[in-house]
Length: 212
Image 1 (cartoon, rainbow, N blue to C red):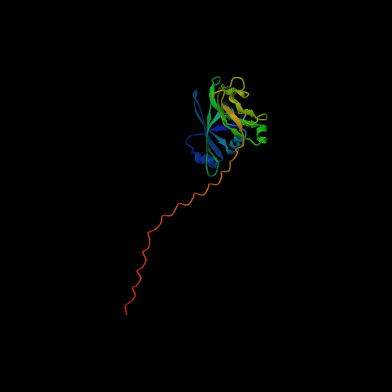
Image 2: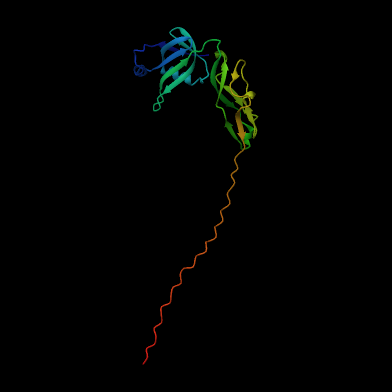
């Protein structure tokens, strides 16, 4: 299990002041505990997020106390991409938890080599399981997937104790045939509309010869 250290923080210290010192404010909460306000070093946070997914259980050491947590929410500055604040959820041991597990595609589908396109219909799958049973991801092996074939929820290697919350017949990935574009025939030119005859122009009267 991945471990990261944190220290308790006073709510009297503003978050901006913590971040100027290279610390990221965070909070731990759960149905069975009071909120715990902590701070983590920014390098530790970046290292943590390079190793985990949303469904990875993390061991958080807070001044000697150990909490097993999942990342619940992350606030990131949209311009600097720096971490602003973290929420950690502390599940109750032994009690089933609902959480979305990301899909990890492995292998190369033969159907793709034949020109098909691999479409991922579910990048995450909601599951219910005891916290300690929840996997960081669910592997989807597409190495035998041909054209017009799919891998369904029921086909996946679910760990014991993990129950997917999608219908078993739902497709997770599928290889669709390449699209064949049919060239449109050029439209025939419409026949020109007949021109209506205009009014006749009257002839000028001829002058009569003068009598001598």
